[in-house]
Length: 456
Image (tube, rainbow, N blue to C red; front, top):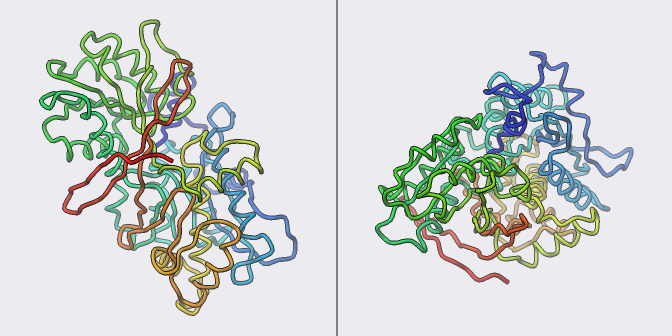
């Protein structure tokens, strides 16, 4: 998922057409004020190991970003569990979080780059956690030359798979190569075999990548139309679609853009009643809160998010999350992925300082540790398993881990973990209801199998 947060402000006249951000000095002076959030356990006098994080915590107007808020909570929970009456190689885990304030568009990502430089130069971090594709793509240009591990929470752009990253860019979110296959399957399940699928997508690595992924599955059955990242031109993108033989529509963008898409669809008679499917960028609880024209609706639209039928591991995580924060982690996408991101980086530290490695903690040794989390004795991310996982990794023994987001079987070459997908339907009161799951199996050679699976 790629979040174009400056769009929120642009839609309400707060920003320029191309980019929305505050003026940021071209140096590191501003970064200290952006990086004041520290997640630790409050234990004084113990050595710590710092992980950096660059997240979108606030929006341009100063309001809290819902995704960022839930990411922070999940990371707090992970740090608390990892540090509870234990340490990793004599150190307590601490996360220093920098807020992009939705400014990633400034100067082609200057804010994210400066924050990464600040974390590396001033706090000597060996690992940085990012959220979505745009910031991840930007930050890796700093972290890879510096030899720092980069772990992404919700970056799904297929483009990240092909980075020349020296094995240092990893993600707990699946590639959009798989989301594209799921969307292609959903969009063709109930239409005539000869009917085509229309795709309207934002012009970005996220939108372009998903269109390309769907085209790999649908070939000439896919008719695509795009619009600029600023959110302008959505009406034209819908109007430009060849409507003569369309059976369904797929939209790729943010939830405010999806509301604009609903308005645009309603203006084209042959599109108004076609089934509509939304990519993960629009699949959030705010979907129905944005302005709709009187004749427009997204009622019955379906959207997708990475997720599997609720496993015991996820349910236990969700209960711990609810007890600590009084909220359901399912309210925001990728919350469990933020939790898992901290766990896997910490376990990479255990490997790096153990007998199977050099004993030095670097981006490269952390990455090598991540390559040892997909085989060996099975463990899950919960407090009672932490000591056993750390002990095995310290001895140079691999472990096969399951996180709150599912099995974390990282591809050692691409640094990616696969995922199943959950399908949600928008109700008349704006509520999103989970109704099905799909399993994705990469058969190699560009062939991907997508099959429905039963929920629990």
